Image (cartoon, rainbow, N blue to C red; front, side):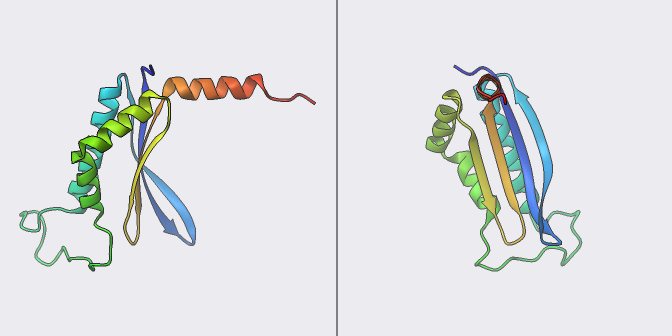
Amino acid sequence: MHDEFLCHVTGYGTRDGRRIGVPLGTYRAPTLALALWWLRDRACWIADRLDPQPEAEHFPSGALAPVADTVLDVPAVLRTWCGDMSQQELCAEELAAGRLVRIAATDDTTEYELLAESVDALRMQRTASMLFTPVA
């Protein structure tokens, strides 16, 4: 069983033809349950910022505009993932087995990526690569 997990949230966009990543948060979770909680919390946090309530008083009139129906609804994708218990169980199983979990949603300008991985698995990969490095 893997006991500690490293979680990241990143937004990716394009500038001058290059893909640029902007870190949106990192968390070192001491348990599997906290890693999953943090991923769900960050997914909701992104969704709430991308899809605010238009009637909120801090938005000037006309500041928000609907997007075309052809654009993927990233907030809906993230909220659906958060509420899907089978997806949560699948993520838990993958993390417990030491595998990387990646949740990503993309609209017409940005990709939002949530990652989690076992710290133990990372250590084992580093150790294995050092043990089998050929020396000339």
